[in-house]
Image 1 (tube, rainbow, N blue to C red):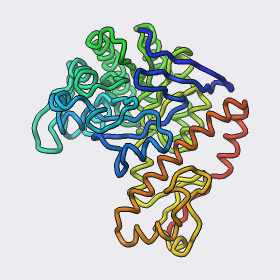
Image 2: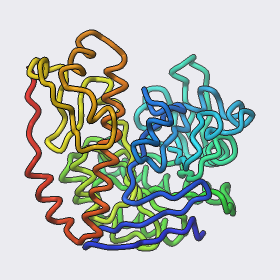
Image 3: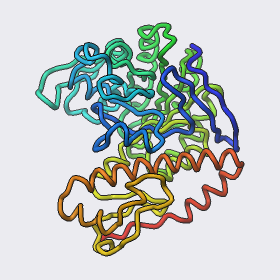
Image 4: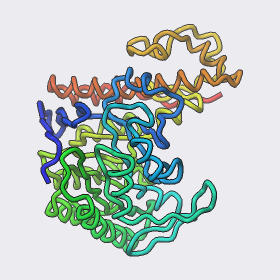
Length: 374
């Protein structure tokens, strides 16, 4: 597999900036992918998402498989046409739900059977079906292998079993995917926080050959320091010439430190989930806009960000919207948060280009403050 052209333009230590060139457009790396779980980045139009500088979004195979359904998605022309997003889309394979919906699924060597949380109907997801739904029905530009990851902490035997199953599923996904010019297939490195298992997983997947490599099974309870220690042993095992994607991460400080360790791509629900619950992300950490201290604060959340939600509305107005239960508050904070994340990615790219990423990291950590609640 050769993959979409991936050009690395500059490096600063292990960090790098580059461009992943897909048929639907360029993805500037390091890149953050807003999560569009069910065909929407929650609370935002595609125009708003694009205005933040987002080059690519993520869709979720499990949720789209349930509603509107893979076959219907294909009849409607695929996810790009359905949701009116003409840039690249990466799809989660459904592997995360193998962990998060453990009470609603049965796992075996061949795949996983889910009982729908929507209507109780049974759905079977195998590596082959995961590829069919993502590549042929949803029409994703970047397709992920089906994998399994246990929540951490977990016994080493369970972590090893999940890692070995994911390796077997990766081989089956690659066979089902075949040769495609307009789509890429990424493998997923598993192994918990165990250095030996991570290296084994990475080396096996690299020898098999994929278009890109994701690091999965982190941000699932292990903590910030353990996550970074795992990246320290895993990322050096991955090819320099292919994209590296850290799945489901995360908080801004997690992203900053992961970029320094050579990660190119990220996704997380945090920007929009926080926005719906009244949190505005800033370099100092999240602001709880519902706090009384913002009731008469006429300053914007961040006037340095080129986004109407960040610069044109006062904290006092946003505070009022949440206290009054107005939906506009959720829209504006979700929009600001996605814009903040993209602003952070641009500053990281600029810092790497200027060879001062370490200074940026130190300054970023120094600005972090704990959130003060009412």
